Length: 119
Ligand SMILES: [Zn+2]
Ligand SMILES: [Zn+2]
Figure: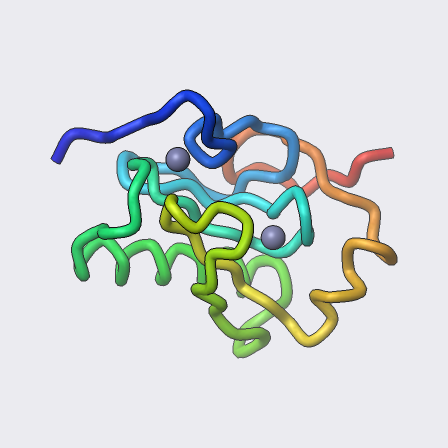
């Protein structure tokens, strides 16, 4: 399936500011700029990835969660608050709400590299 990209969508833009855990032809996983928890984003603009792609993306998100928080921490949140028209999901641990206020954000240092914090 062809990837659909629109101009005025921040998820299509896929700006690399924060840490990126993973990227392939289907999706990318990075720290969300707003809440600093891992977020998987479908590379195509829309809300209807195939079930197979959804499962693939959620597995990649879980892997990023294990990398970040350790095994069995947090849960997947598929509510699309900020960009309801583009499929994405967050992995939220118990501290996710306070994280943006208490934690230094990460910065981009290549896909799958060390997670480096913004100074
Ligand atoms: Zn977020
Ligand atoms: Zn989009």
